[in-house]
Length: 377
Image 1 (cartoon, rainbow, N blue to C red):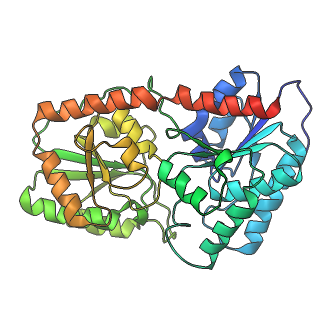
Image 2: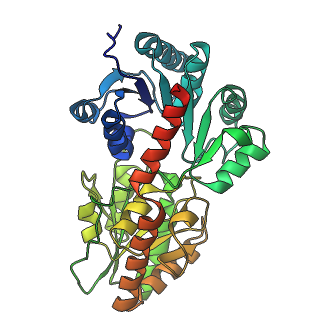
Image 3: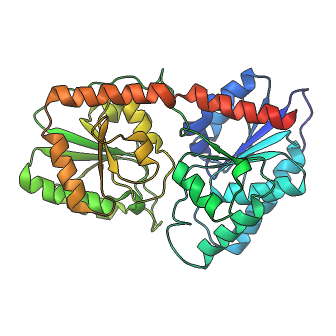
């Protein structure tokens, strides 16, 4: 596998799914191509691979399994990076998601390719104990040393990594999330109805706080049966990190949640929402689902954790509640549902203004281009 030079600088973006890169960075890729770059995508093949190719990117299959701990599969992923970088010989590489940060950094380091990594959230690798999580933390300390830049979305995550000498202060650059396309996500009013509707839209992981959301809705329904919670998102059968379809069905039968399935365009969910809720206890970056909802002028309800705090200013554009606390979540849901329409609309407007002021996609893309240009020059 080799690629004939077309006289343009080459950049590789890698992540553990094509879905992630298309949904989070497709406009960034377009901006790089407009700036004269040849853009390569290294990621597993999935339903979004062809969409990336349609943008004009060259897709390179990467044999990486996001949740695998099988050493042979991990070795295959590392070899996959070597093959990609040996074939493309990029001028610069950007890595997203944990395994790409690690394996991509090692391959780039040994092949002398300038590279930068993005840490959108510390995730379960830094929330829990175990041999694999200890390995990840040691690997970060060793393999990040030659990364030219390491992007963080949360100041607390940055400080956590610097204090533990997992990265150095001169490497880090703080970004305000992965950016929001403000021309795509516009104020999206809900068709008014008697019921107050909370919406969750995202991956249906236990770490997103679903057990607490179901229990909170059990408490909420006792106070006000007109309050609803609708859930949109992907399931992954057989993966214990994801809530099972059977569990969702039990909650549906109890009248707590309504599962609406995956959604190609989250703006449909926004049009049905009085408030967007994210009861996560996962160490996220700045959740894109919250930023998109804020851009749609929706009030937000999330847990008082790094990342969520950047997107939700308590009492301004939404509310924060305690993590892993169904009673705190239920209390916040009831307070939100009892607000008058004018106050809810004011929260939505302030959320839109917050996103416009600091979370627009153009600003994030400019930072990546600046780093790429500096590394090449």
